Image 1 (cartoon, rainbow over the protein chains, first blue to last red):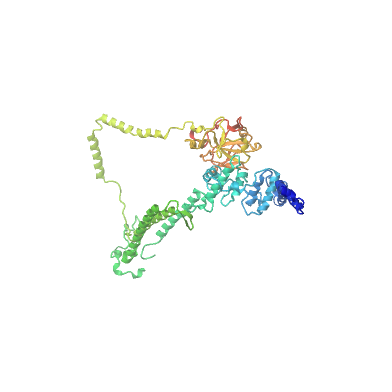
Image 2 (image 1 turned 60 degrees about the vertical axis):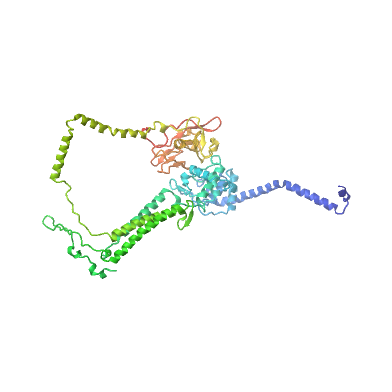
Length: 270
Length: 354
């Protein structure tokens, strides 16, 4: 201390004090930084909502109404949440070509993920709804594949078939295949219940349950999945297998029988 | 080798003698059409050329040998290939090596036996056409008379007509014997009695979520969602779980109360939460292909369709009656509970259902 006070008249003392003061200010700034960052986030959020609103006005408003209130051509989007937007637009179902027809099929995605996020931000600003799930929620870590299989067979297999290959519903509607569907979109579909699919909210199918189901689907439909039985024939069960057996199995036998009987064994060919 | 260069000495001598053989009738007034008989027999290469016959013999022997090798291969694959080994085979993809090897060897061994038998029969076994005349199947009068005389002698010697006690007891023994078979049919029972009319649901039983094993609260069930429930107290490891859940399985959906058309359905629901049996009333398939926009439930077995917004009325398909609805309410602790059993038997109709 003595040393320090002895140098207080040093020509550089003012500079040292100044530096200390600056460091203090910096430290204080750092301490308060989160608040400012949140503010910055909020700005980014409102910017996303603004951008999303513009995209919405161009691409969605004709059916869903200028304020997302819905019309005769499309349902209200108030309260559907960001997850619903990410699913519908991220799988190309929206924008739909027409509001007629049995159901809106999956097709080429027309928006970039950034644009989808902006649309989602705008829609979730209209009313609270499920958020877009994070990797931690739908990722494979900590998932129980066997439990997922059980849950899938209880809740999903009636429409989507035992390994998620899809199936028919009434009047031209169908449950689509879940092969090659992004785990995030599977999660969002369970959460929001797109089109005629019922929803499975976290209150009845917990987040862990959903994670298990996704892990099961990856196990039975992933790139590494083995098929010990050989040709899957679409994985649709006894119908396609029976049809294959009748046409190719029995057909082959008949063809061989006809071939044998059509050739004469006689020396003189007539 | 064509038919031109068949050596003369190999031709069987009888070929030209018979020509058309087997002709039995000639044209006369009664039968204006003569029976032409069988066409002249034609020989196979193997009948006239020993080299061709040898070739056929070798082919048949080869097929039988192939079958033997394939059978040995089947046993060898069964012994050596591990169950979980997987191989990539185009166009089948990743497939179990054992399944593939067993199927191929078994198929080849059986097919080779069949192919060898067919080739053997067609090329080497005799193919001479034979006419086998029909004869009346009636016995001659002498044989008939002999049989009748023997029967009369037998009846007389056994004294059945005279010793009435033996006859009567014999008839009794023979008539009673089949009863043991009839009595055994009792083991097909016992009769179900009223088991088909009741499920585990009863007044005050909580609706337990099949996924989480927790009792459900009304706030858990969102509009448009689909939930499956079992009665409180029924656990998956219970010995009678399958028997009981097969009757008690419950499907819970929530419909905006103003969209419910059926008055009783609305009364039996709780704020639009309705609980229906998950068992199809046609042949009892589990049925839960629920379309949340139309409120239709489709049965995957025979396409029976029920309208859950209108008392689960049948709107399509072979089902005979609406899905039974479970009357539900909320208990003091705020959980969904049943207010009794189903009013009618769940699942398919049966004779005594009424």
